[in-house]
Structures are given as structure tokens and as C-alpha cells.
Length: 308
Image (cartoon, rainbow, N blue to C red):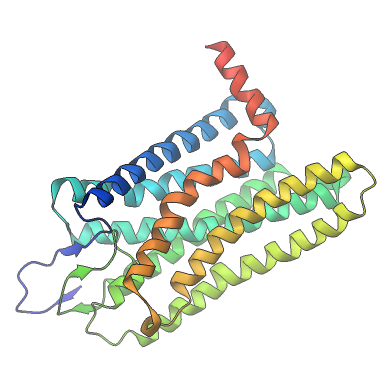
């Protein structure tokens, strides 16, 4: 990274989202509570799917990958935010900022692709139930899961390489509670227009392309469900689709709001709140919406408790 000769401390300053007023102290405590819930819920999901053989199916394997990504995502941002708030030390080293950007962007991108894979899994299960085990075999399922991690990691490497090559010759104060790419672009005294175009192209690939596949998959699913003669089958399919689409709407909506707007139209306050929503709240809601209210997961949980 290139630094201005007059700057002796290359560390960035994370401004955070909380002050020390009573209201913000309460909100900070609430965030810690949500973080603890996300930590426990996602860890529980991964363990249950690993321990119970009845959950060794492609659908639950993909759910375990989602929980693992959510677990890593929330641990990438919240612990540092909490440490900065409690200690009063808001600085973050260049290496720490690089690490945050890499893990955050990689996990964010991997989850975007994973949600599309999960939509394809539901499409095959509902529209082609007799061919499900051949169309969604373990080899293909594993290959698609690994691909989501690789594609996300590649995007993380590109973003780190680009943002850390810019010159930062002014303020080091990042108007976020973690090292976020759009917030860093505001601090650069280098022309970032080419990189902003690259970000937009990446967003089309990582957001709009998977979202299009999800919409196509669930459109076919809904058509198939409407044609079902079984009321119970319709209810079960609609419940599953509604759960998945709720998560997709929250995740992709917030992500497009952050990354697909022009830099000139950004508001630091709005960016902070929306970022907090999908980096803190969404990882907590995912296991609740997708899995923990599922009967198979509830049985697995009861089975594990019974053994203990």
C-alpha cells in the first residue's frame, strides 16, 4: 500500500456505530446478545447435521455450509467491534484490515452462490422428486459447495489486492464498524473509478446472476406446487419456499443497497445500519428461518439431548 510521506501511523480508525450514551450502551448490549445467539444457533446446526445420520442429505449438508459461513461471517466483524468499543481503541492495522476485507468479501460472495445452489436443490426436490438422487447426487452437491467457497475466495483476493494498492493520503477514519470496501474508497486519493466499475461487474456476477437463478428456480417450484393435488404437500412446499425466499430477500436486498449504488449517493449512517442488518442480524435469523423450526432438526436435537 502507498502511504503519504507525512503520515507516520498507517493504521486505520474504525469509527463504529455506537457512542457511550445510555441508549447506545443498551443497543451495544443487544448486539452482543444477538451475536451470542447467532454463535450458538449456527454452531448447533453444524453439530446436529454432523451428528445425526438422518440429516445426512444434500439439503441439510448445504444448510450446514450456510451455518458455517454465517458463523465465520459474524466472527469476522463483531468481536473486533466489541473490542474497540469496550477498550476505546478504534485503530486497526493494515494487515488486520486486509484480513477483514478478505474474509468478509469471501464469505459474502460464497453465501450468495450457496443460496443459488440451495434454490436449485429445492427445485430438483419438488419438481423432479423421482430423479432427485440422480440429479442431486453427493458428488455434484460436494462440487457445487466447494465451488461456492472458491468463487467467494477469489473475489476476496481481488478486493484485497485492489483496495490495498490505493494511496491513502488523508484521513484514516473509516465510517464503518469494520473494514468495508465502499468505506475505504472514500478515503483514497487515487482515482478509484475503474475499481468501482469492477465492483459493479462483480456485483452483477455475485448478486444478480445467482438471484436470477433463484427466481427462475422458485418460479418453477411455485408452478409445480400449485398443480399438486395433495394439500399437505402444497403446505410443506410453500412453507419451505417461503422460508428460503425470506432469507434471499433480506440478504440480497441489503447487499444490493450497499454495493450497487454509486459512491456519490452513499450515506455513512445508512451504510452502517444496513451493514449491521446483514452482517449481524441475518446470521442469527438464518438458522431460525431455515432449520431450527424444521421437524427433522427438532427430532435430531431431541435425540442428542436424550443421549446426554
